[in-house]
Length: 384
View (cartoon, rainbow, N blue to C red):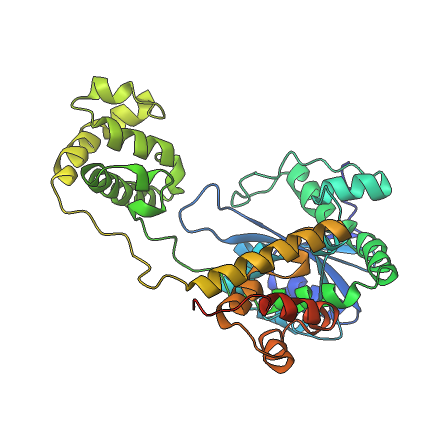
């Protein structure tokens, strides 16, 4: 489904004047649907390239690359009287906080709500199709949103992701209320508002973060470290995501095979002719030299959890899984993983101690607190 770009209802915001007009109009609404588009698949340092907002039948496509200072939008995002509706808000919030320093209050996440209601298909397209028979064209989901000008089709795609969020929110909110789960959902929405910004720097290029790296020999891990550092440096220079230089699988395969020449390198899975032509000699030199270097050691967790903690964790996980099955929801809807880990580690001895550990989850404490405490105390922790 393509959304019509009628200038009466769709406003392209790419200068200070139209941005100020957009902000003034949004200040007078009680809820806004928000989405973003970024360029993480195309550059080394990703950035938010588009912010879409729909409210009161109007849609605003805000271009951060051309508009400049967006700080005025924080008045809307931080206003507790304006509901912000997202679908899968976590990544959007992390990026918006990183790039613009925005703060958020009063949020509703339609994906979180759908999970809490036990929906099996929680993508926006699937939900709109099942609830309203609306079919979204997701052709531009992985498009390069950093290019300018944006095509008409890309703008239509961008607007469609917020145009229908409000009515989806209404549907899911009513179901949450019917099932007496709105308080638990609100806890998750509040936790999302407090999420930390994304890091401005990509992950450190270290061998143990590459899948399969820990299965290599010490010499092979040394080679893999050299390849990781080379890939990261080249990605920075060419302003590309590292995977577009060489995939993780290719790095591991090169470290394993230790090619002695470009012909041998070309036979390795994941290495194409363009890679051999551009980097062949460099890669071979890296695998030779770094195999002889002392590898960077992987951080070691020096403190193993006690038997009491491990036992408590297992009991809580089993209870959470079974409760999720009974309510037909994912297990982390019952108790988020981070809270489960804290409870397992601390081992609360009474209700007040557990309540303190679950102070950000009062609804879950009220609903499940007695069960959680009983399970936590179920076996002796004498092995702690």
